[in-house]
Image 1 (spheres, rainbow, N blue to C red):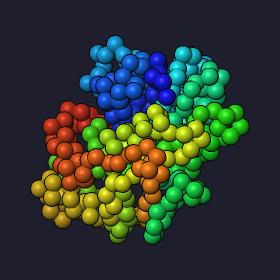
Image 2 (tube, rainbow, N blue to C red):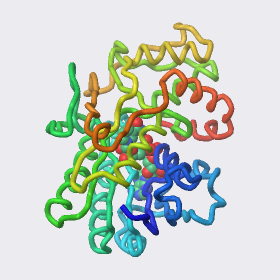
Image 3 (cartoon, rainbow, N blue to C red):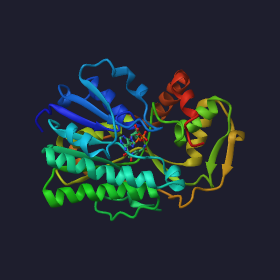
Length: 331
Ligand SMILES: NC(=O)c1ccc[n+]([C@@H]2O[C@H](COP(=O)([O-])OP(=O)(O)OC[C@H]3O[C@@H](n4cnc5c(N)ncnc54)[C@H](O)[C@@H]3O)[C@@H](O)[C@H]2O)c1
């Protein structure tokens, strides 16, 4: 791809989107270093302009508070945009179980508004950022990009809806749409309702941590920086219409993860509070990421022990960031 003049990043004030924006604006993605960066974010409970504070003064960055479902606004922002990287979503599974409507509205309908806006404006490349959760649950082995989707939660079903629309815009209109699907992310600026930051902040405050069911659910943990590098490789060199898995983190049961977090914060097992399992809780996710490794030279760079220690240190040193957010979290 030739160097884009403008990149539109939706959800760029959230956990992963803001990591991508901070890295891009700091010069971390050379091919996009000259691009104007426009962030479109509604600043829902999960969005936070403070996540962009380290790059807020950059003349390269423009922040627009707005809704991806706003057809007129999206149409305006698409004019002159070369690349869209679409992170915006309702992203918390537990919230989708107590109320699915916003998930369908943003993750499905909002994605369609963006796709149509991009098509109408002749945007060159659209990257749909998605999740391994669209495949459901797998006891053994790993999913490939050819595996049929079978989502189990309203969150993952809504993400799958967005993915199917993205695919359809490629098949129907020949649009250059690329889909990434990643495993569970961890790292700094992660909203403290998700398990890693929730457990770290509780433990730092001497509070118990709620462990679902038997603690045996397995997730593959990848540092957010590796996820964003994978997305960037797909944006730069992926093929139109293709799905790319981004994985290669560390598989752990929730109990194993909890033990590591207890050790990192100097707490013991008495801080574990077993709670009733999540409804429809997927047992295990696992992606085969051979394709992105072979085709685009992707490999994760952050080893889990180092990444987790850095993340715990970040939460220790950034109370001013997370303390106000806890009140907004679905605890
Ligand atoms: N967190 C993970 O482990 C993970 C793993 C794989 C894929 N993903 C995907 O990555 C993307 C980003 O996830 P995240 O963890 O950063 O989520 P997040 O909840 O931290 O951030 C989502 C952002 O989207 C914004 N947003 C929500 N609705 C919007 C709307 N209607 N219009 C404009 N902005 C809106 C929010 O304000 C927020 O800033 C999501 O699409 C998610 O499905 C996440």
